[in-house]
Length: 313
Image (cartoon, rainbow, N blue to C red; front, side):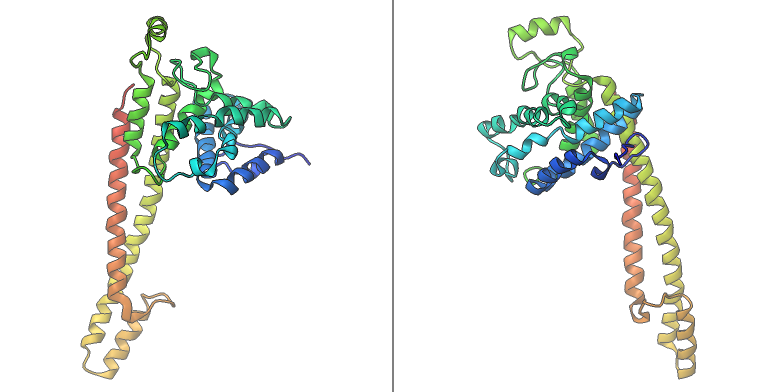
């Protein structure tokens, strides 16, 4: 029975939805570099969400998302010493790394099942202003699916934690992409002439970037709701353990065995079977610490959403 794809209605895309041939390629990629596999899945997820917000139809969304899954497949043949290098690449190493686009294209073209998705592998590092690679294409010469994947790929790569760089926050990452969406200084005279005819051209598409803003805001607001639910749970736990602690202190100060037994039974009414009455003070401290940390993070997320909503391209 043929497997069914259903990316369009899902916000979390898993590789088991994919064609057997594609799953094989991804498994090979995973065996060489776990980071690249996670990156691939994250880029595919963001790509799918972008397609939805850009009002692409289900067929194109499926196609574009599959291209995103395969966009880095060429890294299978990049030497591990370069692919997994813990420090910044040299210029020579970067030139080798860039070949993953043409290698990925050849992999796709040599497999009939992968051939329809070769555009993602070949074009996802092309820039609208002609400064990308491997072919330095301009604007409409770059397939739209590759333009979408480029934005998803760049955002995920900037925000992901790698061994050789400090983690960059979401707002800072979006500001970097805003710079990439704006015209830059022409690198040479020929490009400068072309830029004069295309004054509003940056590296990436502004409308796709605006859709990314919405993806990030939606995800962050969802996270706020989820974390708020957990904070409410922690708050209830603090209330429960506080009551247990009240009786715990009374038990500690009781002068008779009967009173101690009475308070011990009261404590049991507030504790779960696996919880140790002697650890009540420590438990309460841990819950209060967790509550404050989660509250602080929610405040940070709210601030992040406000910052993103103020961004302009």
